[in-house]
Length: 242
Ligand code: MLT
Image (cartoon, rainbow, N blue to C red; front, side, top):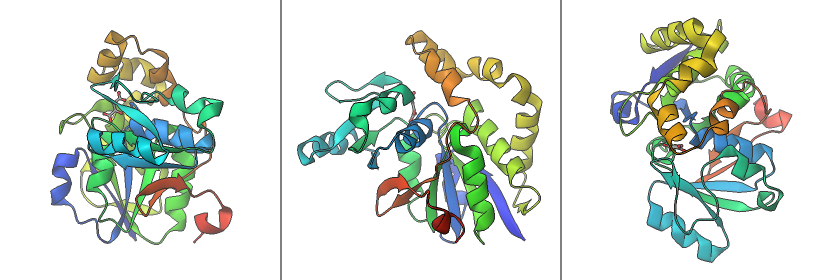
């Protein structure tokens, strides 16, 4: 039987073998929620950069630049890291270069995987359906916060692991831990996540509406995947059923 595992922080990734797995990267607040929103709203591609200067240089190549550090939009960049930035009609059809505090770093670290999938509550059922159709073990990688575990990514890991039942078995205890947390908190997930450290940080920066939006389930039916360094939509049925 296929297995599902959870890595609660990119700093623990060295404990996992990814070369034979699909890695689902998650950064609920807000990197992978933004990527999912962008792809759903017709962004052509999104290139993730761990490094801010490298990202900035993409502007000269015709890319929109997007991102944040510590939750704040980067000076001189076209977009911040709000899902609402990606709903703008002007972003449709564009290529975006993005750098964020944790999310793009987690994607960078996953590059040795067979495939890297972008997960969020916004597309959780589409991602689960895709993973069920593939004959491969799965690792859910939480972006966390600067190496530390965070609540919202861990809850997503639990929700996705739960959604993969009964087709996957747990590779270790982390999926069980994450599922138990999700099941305990899912009925008042917005209130629970509001008390998380990053939600508090965002609230201090007057970013309020993103939190609730990023916790919506199944807003979009897209599966963004990393292909040749770019995040693009994998949304045709043929590919999804491979
Ligand atoms: C990150 O990568 O850490 C985030 O997405 C931070 C944020 O946008 O608030």
